[in-house]
Length: 327
Image 1 (cartoon, rainbow, N blue to C red):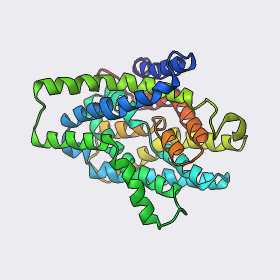
Image 2 (cartoon, rainbow, N blue to C red; image 1 turned 120 degrees about the vertical axis):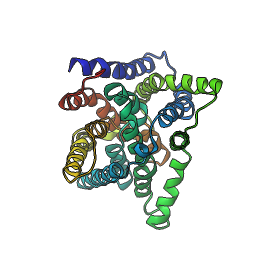
Image 3 (spheres, rainbow, N blue to C red; image 1 turned 60 degrees about the horizontal axis):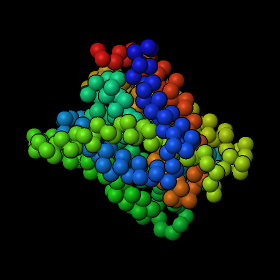
Image 4 (tube, rainbow, N blue to C red; image 1 turned 180 degrees about the horizontal axis):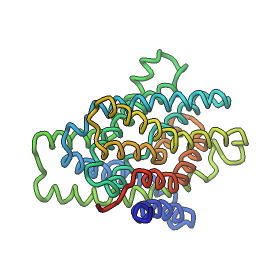
């Protein structure tokens, strides 16, 4: 456990540093969009591009992992939808709660953390699932959030698919996979620039998550602590529990069952996918919720709760797998 914490604590410490910087006013809240832009359009695409170039294309598009992961994502989405209906949450808020319940923070936290814990071989399975979440899970939940606004479910899904297509991360993964398949590399100076931006991705992304989490506590037009009432907290606790406990357990069960039935899944793949599901919710969903008129305060508190609790639960999951960083 000590070896695991020696890797995970710095990651969560950077999140805390960003939170404290925003809380103390050292980092103006107005600068957070600029940090997000740097991470989303420059640093993180370069990091994923670097991993994509160094990862065989078959690992980025593994059909067994893809089918199992999507099946479990559907189960998680349905569970949160049922929970939201039972607690009388609005359909739009429930759809975004389902998205944060099924979409781990695989980009900002997952790829660098799991590579640090498990080695470079973890990058392929994690990037594979990240693509599925960005392209399909997000689109389905956005379509559910926009039901009843005209058009059928199919047109809502196609409209929701536009957002992931404008996201630079899938394209950077696609470019990296293509270069890997063709055996291409960047020229020296270009490679140096890409690698420098890639090295900045993890610390800046984690710092930015902390600042975003603090900003979510600042009273806004919707979802403030004062107007949320007690009715929201059971939904928050339920989604956090589903994200950190049910989601990884579902995937672990599915992966082990598939391997028992003859699927060629390695121990590394099982550990990487399960630990990826045990990550906290993706932080960018709160921005999507705000953009689509959902209760941003509710979604931000789910993200905050999952990020805080994951400091303990993720370490326990890693310890259960016997992870030994550096070996």
